[in-house]
Image 1 (cartoon, one colour):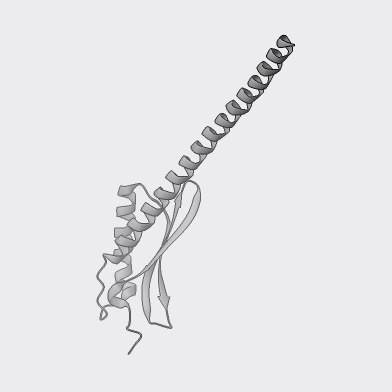
Image 2 (cartoon, helix red, strand yellow):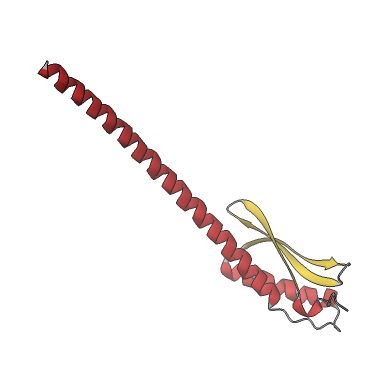
Length: 130
C-alpha cells in the first residue's frame, strides 16, 4: 500500500510541476508581448506629442496669409522630422470654416502603421464668444 501511495504522490507532483512550468512559460510570453506593445505605444505617443509641439511653436499672425507662410512651415517640419528620424508621409494645411481656424495636419508612419497628428495654429484661432 505504501508503494502505491508513493507512486500516486509522485504522479500528482509531476503533473502539478508540468502545469506550473507551462503556466510560467505562457506568463513570460505574455509579459514580453505586453512590454513590446507598451514600447510601441509610448513611441507613438512621444512622436505625436513632438509633432504637435512643433506645430504649436509656429507664429503666424492673423494679418499674414497662411497659405504663403505654409511653405516655410512645411520645410521646417520636414527638416525637424528628418532630424528625429520620423517618416513623414504628408504635411497639409487644414481649415475649419465654422470657427475660422487654420492648422497643420501631419501624416506619418511608425512601425508600418500610418498615423495623423493635427493641431491648430494658436494665433489663428478665433474666439467663439465674439
